[in-house]
Length: 484
Length: 94
Image (cartoon, rainbow over all chains, first blue to last red; front, top):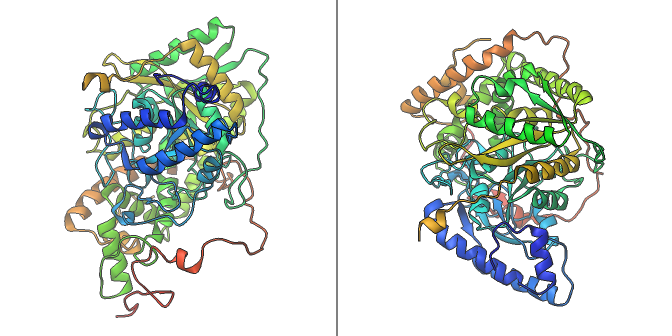
């Protein structure tokens, strides 16, 4: 049985009807992994033995009619900055290359209780800092649609495994677009939930006020299923929000705002075309489309590149060679720390720590971090005001399709620009999703991004399912067929 | 805002030893970024409030009740060097 394009619900039905077993699904998924891994390098660890054993346990549960949830027996890959007990969590960094987590992240605990089969840990830009996985200390991941192109980042491995079929779904983390941008580059769905709706406990912190865990999946229904399995208030995360969702009425057509500033300079014709195509389809269904101006989105990159590095410099101060990870010798404790951090961190991570340290240092705090936090409040209010008038906002997910390796490594701003459309949702804490809609002239996937008010995640997912059906994009990369 | 970064001073604060090559490359990159973010300094935000949580939510703390978590041994299991349940580090003073 070919699993291509089957939703998790459909697979679950087949499990229940005894038409296929979880261990057989894992076998197929592992087969894809064996075929693709030498080309893609999407994984840092593959849990073959453990996954086989767990999928057999799932077989037995279905046999007895005692399955734990719709996700029971579903193979899911995990980004390697999320802790799984007794497994390494490297964050693609030399400084954590020997770290073994003594505990499960809350999202892992929840998925474990659902009977999910964890397939392995996926590659990322070091500490989730980057947009291409070129910053992984263990080598980059390739894009399944064209291995000369990046898969996006930082959750590049998580997007690539779903795209190629070596997992049915994956978890990523999104600080400035790290779920949505790679999902777009790899032609799959990527969802960043409302800030605080999914616990960050056990996610290695990069920028705590922006980080959010979310699913990468083949379709919107799968994203909804995984999101609802991992969401919920967690007393172990002080920023976690109460589980009170807000609904946008479903029984009417929607009013959708097109963000003017994200359809202007710096956005490729390819990316604009996908938004225009989607708008036409929505219009034909009776939805109202209006142009919306959010001028501050043009400042989002500047705000982000002060807040994120500032928080990262504080968060990454824990990597000091004392409690965990790498240690390089030194005559004094301070020398040991300086040597350890010099050896353990890669260039991009050092750059962001230095930038954040500078922005937080005496004399600069108010001018940089303080000013950025105030501007962030203003952006958040701007979004709130616009959502008084529209139900959803639409934009491209990325300014361009996936780019080639090395194309944006010389000038940091060029790389940062690839998150231009995704960063605003992180600053305002909003839910945002990337839905694949078509291919570029070069045959690389393109997507649209839909945003909605905070806590309306399930409404956003329902609306996105409608868009997905209207667009009808079902193509998959032909990498494995081509390599035969 | 000032736009020239004293890379050596910042590296010292961040406790990262940088090679001369890194100082040059990272210094250049950081100045490019600082020039870009300088646009923020032109915004008049005097009356705006600072919010840490994007949804402007108060951070909540757990009840101050002890609970089962990691054992002492588990919590220290990743340390490069321990002795008698304590972390071992080089001297802190020269």
